[in-house]
Image (tube, rainbow, N blue to C red; front, side, top):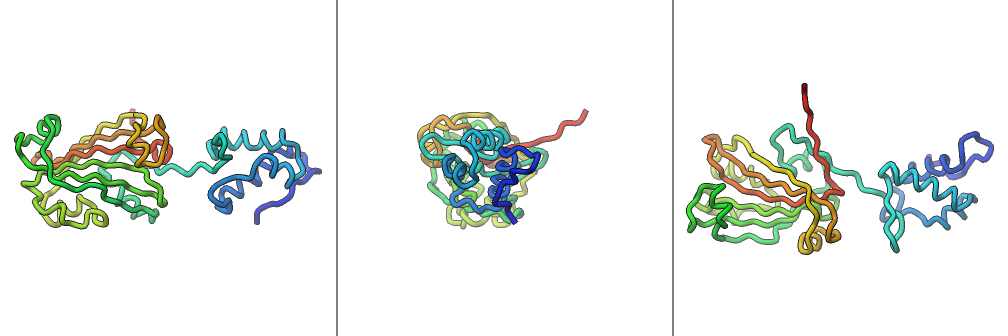
Length: 244
């Protein structure tokens, strides 16, 4: 049960008691829209000074639990999805394994020609056709990833006819086309969102993000896919382990 009153006889400072009450509210998910009451509302409800309220909120903000947005209010910071870089991973598959509310929306699927850079990476001819897929991944109904995927048509001629919103692309490649994936090579770079990216990801221009560029290889070390992902920095973090 969430404590609703401050104990004024306790040696524990009032601001700390208030902080603990707010922390319980945050953990309970009871705050509608993730929005905290205003300083004035908290001051009135708990009969404390606004200075006490500010100190409690400041501690929660310093711990990365809340954020204050000018003109909008104070909101609970959504937890970041943690992805390990120690193994081959598919974010979509891992989301489903963790029973996260995750879905995909395809924005573009078309046959196109490669740029010089993609042509060189995939080791294909200038005139070869490419499957191009642009999709947005949603976590808890919020857009968090924008992906651009390029796969040669000559190895996956009917890829765009598949259910690429519900079925992982790697599953389609392996199950439908008998393509055995060996490894991927990735580069991860911190970036800031450009106007179009920010619009699609419902963020602000200049917000921090990750750019992950992935090349997928088959068991014969043949490159089969180029994938570029823009991932919101406020919703994801990547971890690794280093041994001496």
